[in-house]
Image 1 (cartoon, rainbow, N blue to C red):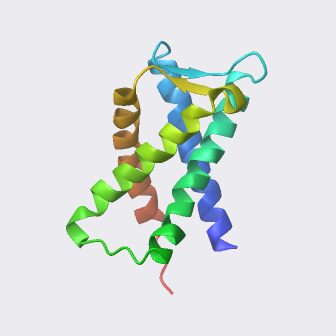
Image 2: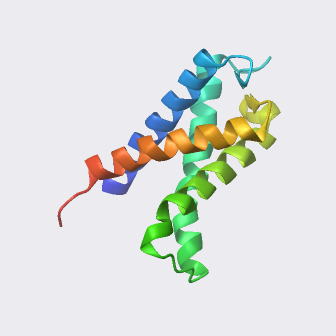
Length: 126
């Protein structure tokens, strides 16, 4: 149950980041198409981005990939960038597009900051 709540928090954070990026840079980040409104596209793109982000953890464990402690930020930046890039490849289905991968890299960097803060806030003592 806690994992579901964490997923929803992360989904909300990612959706808000997508929506704000579209409002601040409307010519670079495009939300919505003929089928989906801006809000529906933000929710769908946020869900796909979050799902890909969350699935990177089990994939890392399955591949037995070890990370040094000082490179976790770069790892999460790469995961966010890859998840965003995959999400934009399905722009007709999801309703989220971007003009350049440099903009995705910038959004992934900003997302790292917000997701790190969210992870610190949700850290639970067991």
